[in-house]
Each structure stands twice: as structure tokens, then as C-alpha cells.
Image (cartoon, rainbow, N blue to C red; front, side, top):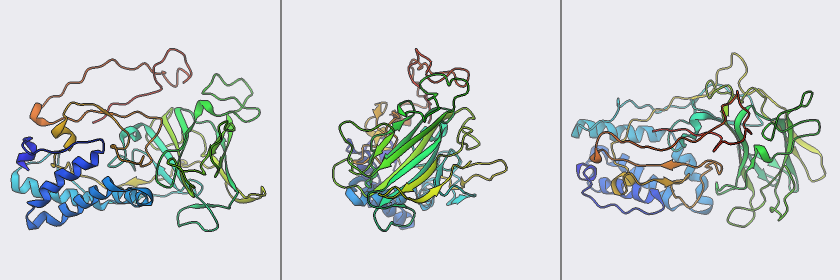
Length: 380
């Protein structure tokens, strides 16, 4: 451990960042005492699985990376290192928890907020975002947790434009890879409505939209307001969709969790003949007095050094998925600039740059001209 922290052990570093992390843990596994061997073996094997996953194997990786038991594995490792070597970062507290609270939006069975997703492997754009998601399966039978879409059917999403700096519908294929996003400014408003991401909403006009998701290959000239999800990103039939409805920069703030003051879109599943198979009406996901879901899991600061900081400290990377060969449901509309650092270079790290100009919402509309970017956050 001390040799790794001192940079005395060579670690390979390539585009797949999990390769270096697995190598670091592998070095520790080789010399692990009995008290901590099982946890290091578990962690190493998980990193190797994530590094090497491909095709249908990817479906099992994200649940494994988000499993609260990982907090126990890393917590026991952190405790052992603190007791044996006197190395401790942070207060050392950890807890293997669970998602606690209520949820009553069956059309969007999963929600993400700073109360539920502010930990590995979620990336920190969640600190300024509220997400809602649903899973769809094209076929006669759907796995548990998926909405079934009959062959030839489609999904209709109807709702009100959120009051936020950004929102979009993000479909992902069965391998968790991004399919083309339908973002706010590109959505045609419903009759009698205006799109507030394009300009002011005229007096007496509404702010509504209607979007369709079809299990078809995306044509050269796609229809407006249509998500084409019938083909995977890498080619081939796609039976499953992980659809994420992302909002960032709510006018109500990130906490408490909210959908920017509007209801979640209605979800209607229609068969090939146009008959309604299932309908979930618009719903307020967090009504007054409601107890929102909270993830009670807490991670200790892991003393195992980051491979990126060992081999390329201060070198910026722009990745949303750690360089893995799959997107792991990351947002296609957000750029992540990461700069690893190591204490070997000093206890103070200074990063200088010019701040982006952004709309001053809600005083300014998001479409105000002359701004660099919708929003940005800086996090450690």
C-alpha cells in the first residue's frame, strides 16, 4: 500500500480506466492478509468484470456496481488500512443501506436525485439534476421491471415542458449504450403550445408536447418528436430500452427533489393497431407532505490510490463512462472534465480557468443569446 501511494509500483493506464483500477487492487490482493483478503478479492473481481464486460454481460454490471454491499467491502478495507497502517481519509464512517421512502409514479418506476444517486458509480451531474426512468421491452413477454410493448407497438409520452435549464429524453439500448437523445429545444410543441426553450411563450398559449418512441431503425430523415430505439448503437435488433427523463437546473433547485413544478409526462403504450394497452397518467412525483426516496448507503473514503492519479496526475480526461467499451447509461448531453490528483504532489491543488457564461435562470430564459453553455458545476 505504501509503495503504491508513493508511486513506486508501475501501473498500466489505457483508455479503459477500470483496467488500471483493477491492476492496483490486484497488486494488493496478491499480498493481502487473511483479515481483508475476501474483500479485496471481491473488489478486484468486480473491477475485472466491469473492465471486460461486453454485449449482454453489461446488463449485470450496473446493478453490481450500484449494490450497497460495495460500501461494506470498501468500508472494511478502509478500516483495516486505518488500523494497520494509520492511513485514514475523512471520518471513516460507512453504512450498507438501502433506498428508503415511497414512490407512486408507476409509469416512471425509478427516480434519481441528490438524495439517491450521490455516490459511485453515478457521476456528479446528479448534484444539480433530477432524473426519472422507465424500462421498456418489445415482445410478448417482458422481464420483471419492464413495461411490455407489443410487437409493432409504440410508446407515447405527453406532458408539459419542465421549468429548468435543460431537459431531455435519453434512450439507452440493451447494452446500456446511448441512443440519440431528444432534447428540449428540438421538441416540437403540441398544437396550441409554445416551446419555452426556443423563445417566449405567448399569452394564452400552453407549454405542452407529445413524443413517440418506436422500436424501429432510425431513418435518414427521422420524424419530429420521435425516438427510434429498434436498433442497438452497435447494430442489430434492440429489444430493450432504458429511457431516462433528465432535468438539470430546476427553477426550484435540486433539493428537495422535484420535477421543476410540473407533473411527470403521461406514458401510454399502444399496440400495432393503435389500441391502448396500458396508460399511466401525468403525476406529481413529489406532492406536498410526501417522503421522497433516500439512499442511506454511505461510503468511507477508500485509501486505495486511484490509478489515474498514480500514473497521470493533473492530466485532464473527458469521459462519461471511465473509458469502458459501453456507455453505462451516462448522459450523452453532458461533458465530464476530470482531473485526477495525488497527495504526493502537495496538499493543495489549484486549478485556474475562465468561467462559462450561463443564463441567469429564472430571471433570464434559457434561450437568451450570447451565453456559452446552459449550466456547469464543479465538484470533488
